[in-house]
Length: 101
Image (cartoon, rainbow, N blue to C red; front, side, top):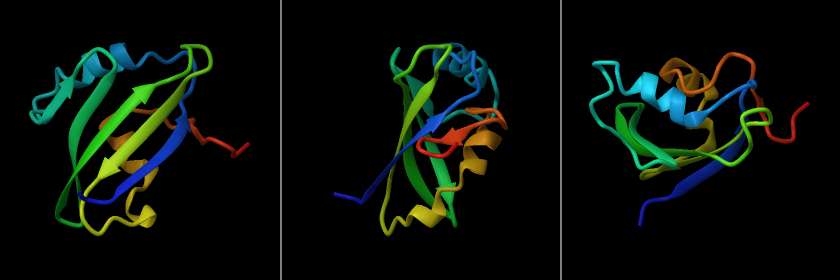
């Protein structure tokens, strides 16, 4: 089983993952993704290696918390910059990793 990295993020309120996913899935470049009503899954390429990424919202739209999971061989927490999630359009520029003011 490949290693797993998990971390939490706070998104800028108001935030709803379902509406964000609806907008993301309309983009032509997002061909390898899925939404089951709770979890958004996509393929994240880091250093040329595909990684399976999953995000779910655990907080309310006014206090949004996101749980992120990335699976793949030889994972390092330094390989998962939040900027990749921003580029994806998943979180806005105003986010805080949980525990950081």
